Length: 87
Image (tube, rainbow, N blue to C red; front, side):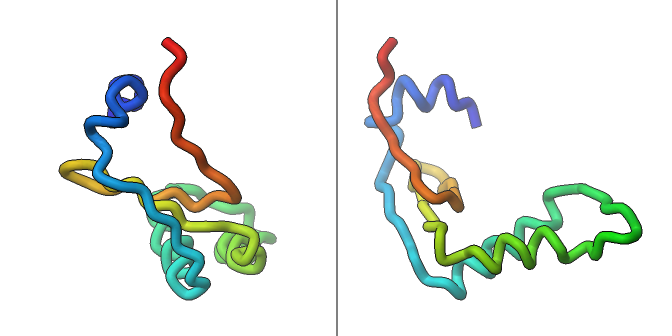
């Protein structure tokens, strides 16, 4: 995704923005992303440690979904905003 283009055209290319606070859905989202991290951990650290840590604090997060014409971006964050570009 070209975020520079999106920053200039977000108002025309964005279909909608929603936010979910369903704990089970956010936990599934975190666990589903682990395959994309492509990380290896030192032998003393259990491979599930980062996931357990994130899931343990999941109530502090929100799952934002930015729906574009042609796709959706999901962002797990404590806060998120979309504002017009100053350029």
